[in-house]
Length: 151
Image 1 (cartoon, rainbow, N blue to C red):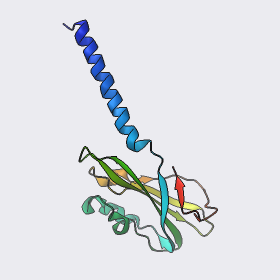
Image 2: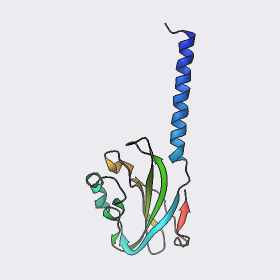
Image 3: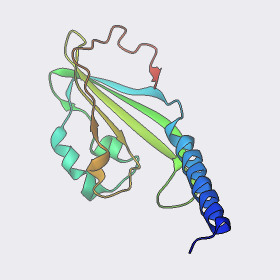
Image 4: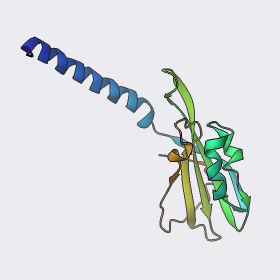
């Protein structure tokens, strides 16, 4: 039989757990991320077949050029990186993470393909963190001359 004292204790534990979850999640998920232009590749394309290599190559910044490097093609490819600190599932410490956004545009600047990925994503299968972004006819007007944007 549960007493009033043990019920209050359980409520306090639940409240502390909820506050801890909110505090930990806001450290990395509510940050404003500033994406900076890494490079712009003309006459290029995104090699989607390399996305399947994510599980064999492991997580890390090296994926920027091993998986997400543009190949020859008929488009313009932009790669952006946002650097931020967050909690890793591997350790209890804050670590530096890099979110990649890669955009493919046609000659008029219309975004045809867009992807987002955290390079240090460590949960297997690693491809689970690869997101396709839907932009439906959005055009780039200044070709990112400012070389960064915020989300």
